[in-house]
Image 1 (tube, rainbow, N blue to C red):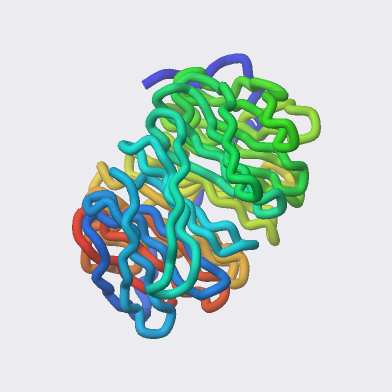
Image 2: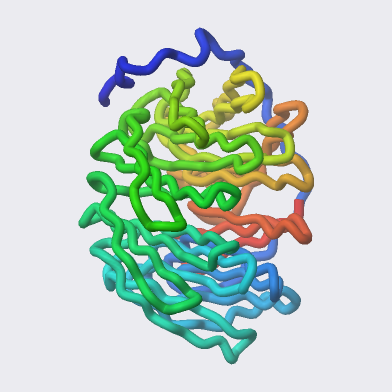
Length: 364
């Protein structure tokens, strides 16, 4: 493991540490069959459907919001990520072994497809719904593919070495790409598809998240103990240090200005950052879990002010964090979970069981 780079000035000297006894309470779970090895999920607001990328069967399951019956749309080889344009309802799937993106549009069983070529090894993507552009991170050749859905044209933007994660601030039309081997974030001007800056950040930047309200960008480390805060106006940075190893996955509550980082190793843990003050709180993973337990996904429901994190390493667990009290609740699932998404209209939680062929729909 590499140490956090010394060029940063720590944002805080210490963090408040909270070790709360988890609460087990009633909730309902509906298990729905989908394709093989389901992973990334995305909610389609126009239809209420949920799209699930199935890595093992090279397709996407589209779940009906009433019957929960899944229809199947073919994709490319090894679909690694999926995102939805909230303005159009189109879903975009990054096919990591096909070097392309599948665009899924239309409604119900009549959904149609388009395919866009990308660079090598597309692993993640993001949409600017205001400009109708899709940005695809190509991990193997250090580029980002920009797709203009209005014209069908694509452009290639050179970024850093082994880019992995991407986030967009639609308010400023800036795109942020985390380059894991360079320990940098590439800042792209969305109006020109040009690189504005390359900013040093935490070691092995694994995830990036944006709070468009404050114009702050957060970068989580996949091989250290820090989160970088990048000012979207100046590109200046500060680092938040933590005792949580690999605070890699991020989620932002734009209403409360709280940022959540999930520990990917060393018995997990959730770092809570107050975006206004910079103060932090560390929430320990329940001790009943094995030391190898890690958090493989995290999401925020801004309507209920709850945070959800899936615990990997076959613990079959979903953690629920109260955004006001930091009280932790344990939800036991039937099978190994790895990814999740939230329907903001009804607050249902969708969890993929990546080693099987099903997802869980949770009413909490």
